[in-house]
Image 1 (tube, rainbow, N blue to C red):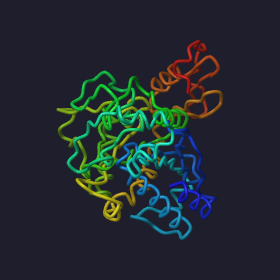
Image 2 (cartoon, helix red, strand yellow):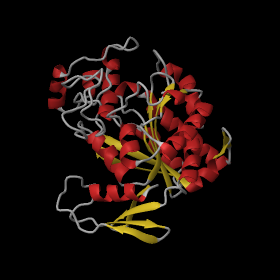
Image 3 (cartoon, one colour):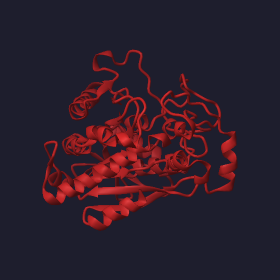
Image 4 (tube, rainbow, N blue to C red):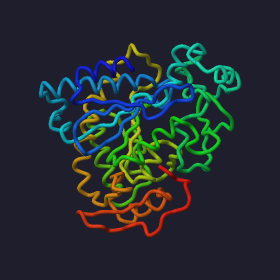
Length: 362
């Protein structure tokens, strides 16, 4: 992955930049790759789950295709790539869980740290997927924590698959956001005004879209969801006319971004049943126009998100409602950070006091 990213940056340096946003437990970089030139931002990540490593391939191919199309002024799935990437920057994190991914490929020999390697013996085998076996069942990070069960929304809610100790899958951890991979994504999300969040996964050939939205927010995500179906062929879960009956969604990355940051958030499942890298072309096909659609939607949506949050003159978030902007400031300010809300250049709110607590420092 790193080699491919370096080659992409060398070939398309005006369009691409990358950096590390954190380190995994086993000291691997968690890489952020920025694609585009615009001030409007969206976020897409892959390989939160180790065995779903093909999502990293999907993202890298998205980037390569878009770079080539940008310079050749090619249209992809009806989208003008150059026009969109001149206005939008896509923040990709292609591999959120590098330790877990390498473990599914190389087994114990991938683990560098002696203590982590010794700890593998105490991690339970919880997953019973009929489609994977051995180390290819592994979804968690290298300490046995499921990064997509780590997020602080519905933390205390009981779920059907809810192990109480480190496991190859589904263990939520000792407390929310305990893992370095989670912390890296959290910091990235809190410090950048992304308009749309999307996480790539691989089981079901469907997508999850509903995060307890109501009123205009619900209409907003339904409209985008219908475009996801048009591009990918995947059906939404839950179906539109059954919400919120018999539905729950807790502790996932896009659960948290939707509820905490009040933005459209989607989890896309690109494959179904047993698959391998040999099936890549078929698995990749539904993704071809997806980030471009999100980019176009972000440009349209931001006109409604007029309340801009600044921390010490740094633009960090935008919200549709003033109360959401104020709640964000009051939760994430600290003794050193001063927050304010602007709308159309006018000050709508200034945090009246500076908190003495560093609990939610960003």
